[in-house]
Length: 91
Image 1: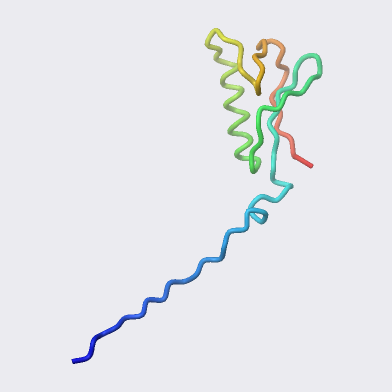
Image 2 (image 1 turned 30 degrees about the vertical axis):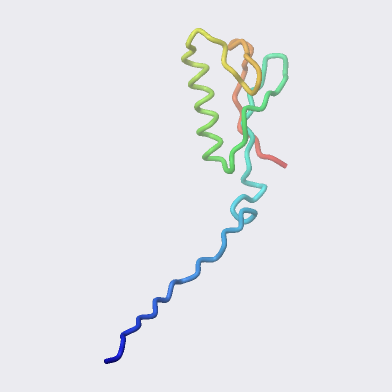
């Protein structure tokens, strides 16, 4: 009696190239602009949509304070010193 052998062919997925996923034109910085003109970086995001999520979370923290000054980067900032939250392209 012959043994039955099945050969499974698994398609090979191409390796993901991180450089191709994140083109420099998509990378965004989220910053807060202070009343004195200083700009403090909050973080970076791989694209505009992710940056907007980060920016909106900063804004919601500013709009509904919990009695504490917001922590932006490594600094506690007086809420009234923040003029805007900006999403900037890099490069």
